[in-house]
Amino acid sequence: MLRIQREMIDTSLRGDKSAFERYTADTYIETDFNGAVTTRARTLDNFLTPPSSMKPTVEIQDVQVHVYGDTAVISSRGNYRAEANGQKSPTLFARPIFGCAAMGVGS
Image (cartoon, rainbow, N blue to C red; front, side):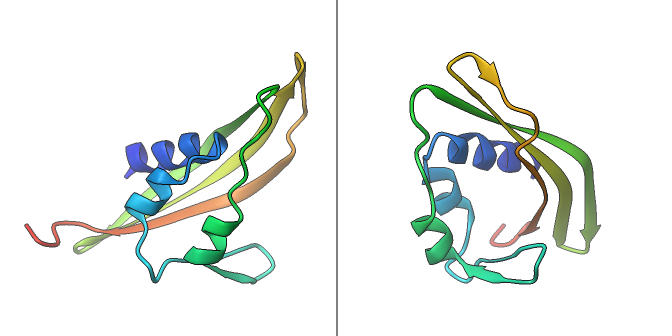
């Protein structure tokens, strides 16, 4: 799960939807810190490709993985930063990152 989380973050920072599309179900939803719910389709519509002069990064912190039977839940915090034209930004925003996966399904 940690590898998948990192792949989804790294590809999304480049505006690449492929990992998100591969690892999320059509029923995927996100709930933000204000309680607003976003569907998978809306999340995909919101993907942006940063300009080539910008190098966004996410530092993952406070990672916790909990296993409940055949389901695992991952929670962490991501600190988002960007470098543009050689200038590094302070943390643009920090947000919780959650994921859930059924393990062993179909095996």
